[in-house]
Structure formats: structure tokens, C-alpha cells
Image 1 (cartoon, rainbow, N blue to C red):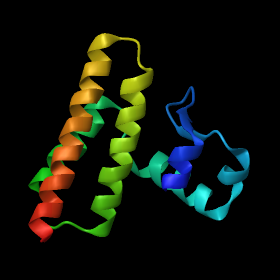
Image 2: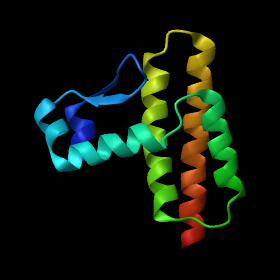
Image 3: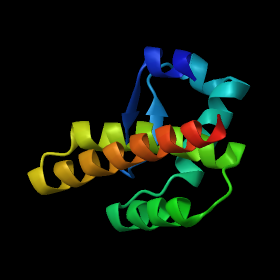
Length: 111
């Protein structure tokens, strides 16, 4: 995943994450990454808030939850960076902070 981040990602017009490196995007791992981030991460602020609430209420913490938290953090960071409307940018920044806090809390519980 770090190689994908280092090579560059961006949001397209449909709010999907795309890789800037077409060769990396065509590789199996690249396709899996794009599928995970674009299919399992909520794309709107209300949907992401609902997702956060559901994760906070769920006592179990699975690998899928962790992956979605990390991917949601990546997606939220990109949304916060590209949006020009300040209220939306602030909302995505708040969501990013909540995702980071939830990730740390869940990791802390695991140990």
C-alpha cells in the first residue's frame, strides 16, 4: 500500500481514487487496492459518519474493519486536500481525525 501512496493517487470526477502510475494500477495488487478503496469506503460525509458510528458501536475489530479504517483515512485525507468549499473540507478533516482516533483506540484495545 505504501508504494501506491508514494507513486501518487488522486480523486477522479466520480470521487473514486485512481493511481497516477498506470503500470502500477494495472498490476494485480494495484487493482485489488483500488477495488478495496473504491468499493468499501463510503464516499459522502453522511455515509462516512454513519460508518464511523457503526464501527464505534461494534465490539469486534476484524481485519476488514482495520483495512476499511486505514483506507477511509486515506480517502478522507484526499477529500480534505482537494475540496475548495471550506465547510466540506472541515467536515472531511474532522472525519479523518475521528478515523485516526478510532484506529488508535482499536489498536490500543488489541494489546
